[in-house]
Length: 246
Image 1 (cartoon, rainbow, N blue to C red):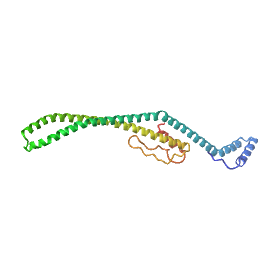
Image 2: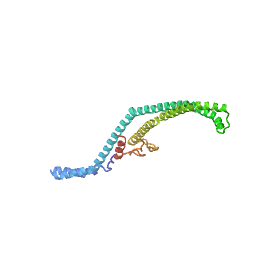
Image 3: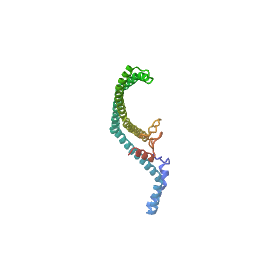
Image 4: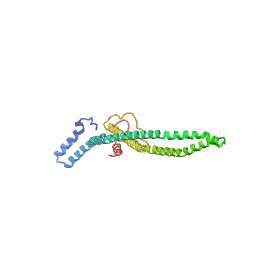
């Protein structure tokens, strides 16, 4: 607000008013206009100050209105949508966890069965290679080997299939990462808007500082959202609203 002149009114304008009346009495138009211009020139700094104050107040009111509208949009649309997206992330994570555990349980028995069959064949196979195996034991080992090879192949195929299914099940992580990244970006925008609104209203924004956002859609706090004082620089306000897409 413009600072009022401490001088008395008569001291500021008395002589000019007398000169103005005298020029009017003489019907001196040029003198009258010269005194009038002098009065307007004396009032110019105060008028400019008052106009500046009025403009700043109008700009602040307009920016608060825009920020209020943006926050209302956050509350009515984007936050409920973010809540639904996070619920979807929880659902995907829960389903993937149960699916992975089920595949692990189904993969255990064939792996264990193959390991036990191979262990049972290890001893007679060693004796066969050392030429210490009896003929009867050799025929038994051959029968076991004939049964083991196709069974091991089927079990290995089942294990491979389950591992591929586990790999596909984990593909949800890319989607959930994108969803979480968009929610983090939304939270950052809300933080910037609230900080800017606090500055415009003359409140203290607090002492906490934002952590710069990382590679997945994160960003720094916008211009104008600094600590302390009221954001009276119009360039800061314009840059802030531009960062919010307004």
